[in-house]
Length: 188
Ligand SMILES: [Fe+2]
Image 1 (cartoon, protein in one colour):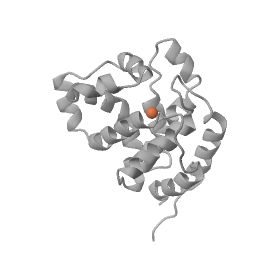
Image 2: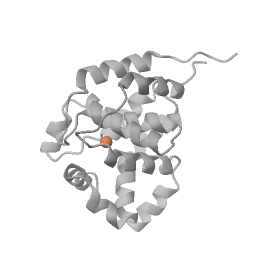
Image 3: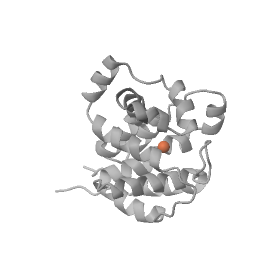
């Protein structure tokens, strides 16, 4: 018999966005504006629901982190991708959590393979890139390409850079949480 999905993850997300969604971490948009804009960019590319959800939730680690903005000011890598992915794994399938886990590596990868990508990064993204290890070497890029969900993480990272427009208008968080429900794990 098929199990039921556990919707407590959606409630936890809603609470997290309510508490910290209005925070910024150096970009011109809040956490919730950034999340919604990235999800919109994924949808505009015709992404599947789990990919749209990964785009929406790729930075939840910043909101779980004690003080992501302070980490940025202190020039410390807050490892938000690992924190966010392990938190999401409680409720979501790998198609959601793994691109989140790899989206910082994907930035380092893109800076290696796409010469225009680095110069197009926001000033904050350029600063954090240095803290995150800088562009990948050719060897690192080759190894990254072989990792499961590498392609999906690269897509998330490209949407990440689009979702920083202070003037953008988006659907609500509830609209995207309905889509996110399709990526919840099924309880056995
Ligand atoms: Fe982001």
